[in-house]
Image (cartoon, rainbow, N blue to C red; front, top):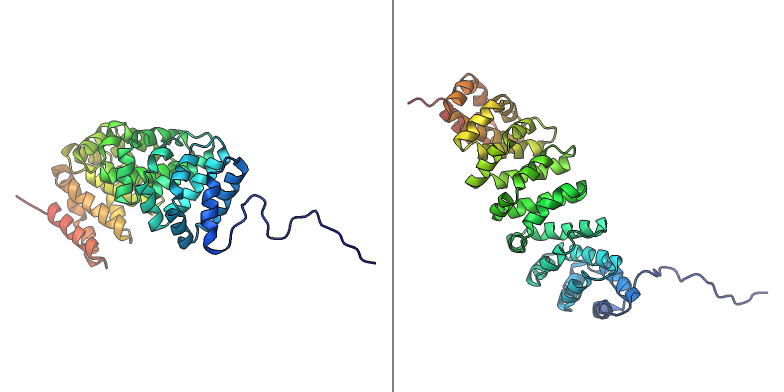
Length: 340
């Protein structure tokens, strides 16, 4: 004989950690209201559900139109670590959409995010840096990070974070340095970047070398790289196992070798043999940067003397399939073979 039994188990496909989602266009407005709830569990569950919804660009746009960004900015200061964690995750998901990035910049979310740079929860700091890195990819976002005065704080955080967060910080710094390198120079950024150049992981070395390319554009940066002893480190990285590291190291060395001091420091560090090897690489970026750096070194008499025997080797680059490599090789040969 059969009977009626009510199971103590939840119905299938019900997640108790997430708020129930209303049907259709009522979903986001309801969750938006729940973000402002005084009950902690309600805020947590609303954030969990929104993190699933905003992966859809249309839902992300709905969230922005519903005016949720002001609520999210307040939740960044919430006493509960889970709320802060899911809020930063939600902001990162929004920053993956064009409309989301523009909205985050318009609502000045960078300032409240800066309060989480020293957040005790590592996962929350990781999300925070992911948001900053995504925003800094746009020039207005990089300018916003600079105007918020975050560059000195990011430089200080480099030595205190793990590999994953260091990579994000260095990428953000690289974007900001392309806009204005002076704040990083004033906060001893070259020394911090030099430490990152010897990191065992290429995930850290590559963005560090890329940031050095940007910081060596102004004259103050070129001088600082010479004074801080970074040139020998760049020469060493010309033989790195990672192609991206080698290419950025050659570019930073090229920028530094524009100055007379940079030329002679590079020559003393043995840059010519390493650059000649790098110039023969099949990769257009590595080869071009190496050839341009050799051109700078050939402007000094000792550099020209070292390179003259290798002109036939450089002439082989004139048949490279890339126009930019062929032009760089032709310029290098002309400078090396120049006579008064």
